[in-house]
Image (cartoon, rainbow, N blue to C red; front, side, top):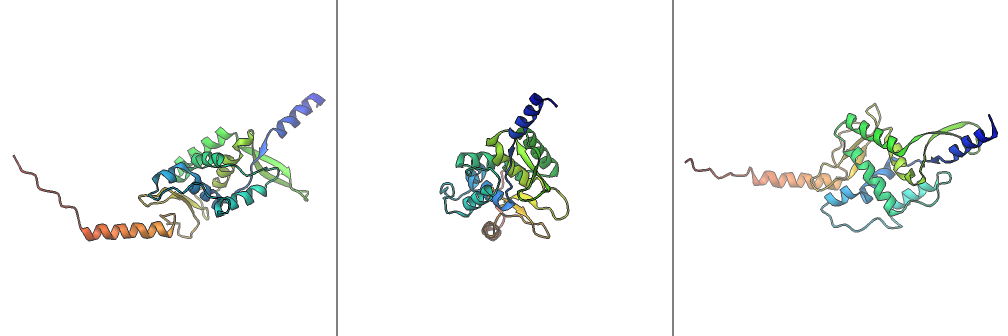
Length: 210
């Protein structure tokens, strides 16, 4: 290979930016606390994005810092964009729709595999990379959701079944029958159902026959 060709290959490799690894707990926290849909649907007054001492921001900063050459953690605007991009993946009505959404995100981001040598080890590690550095957070959320496919032991993605909540969750329970994002939402919906049952069926006035 000529020197010019070799330089071009090297430059292309350097132009691909490694995608940090984020846990599902981190992903769901980002979507719920920064996403526009959960904020819009919720009946609770919005108190702003989580502060520096919040669990969600600390987890993002810790997991982001663990990646090689990650740089500073993304700002609020980047987190909002990434959260909004993947919320539909959680809200998908079935595996087919979820697969189409993930495939579209992979294509749009230019997400692809990346092989590199682990630090302090001689073996190779398979990771992910994107051509645009600014796309790394959205790509990290997508990569975290890729293993959530319909198979034994895989987490089941979903959105809260409460009327006034659109928070997301990853169900890792053995039965995978979770319907709410939290115990609070579950209790609120049960209380609402009890009140509705106590009132009885709505009485519709009879209409006069002409």
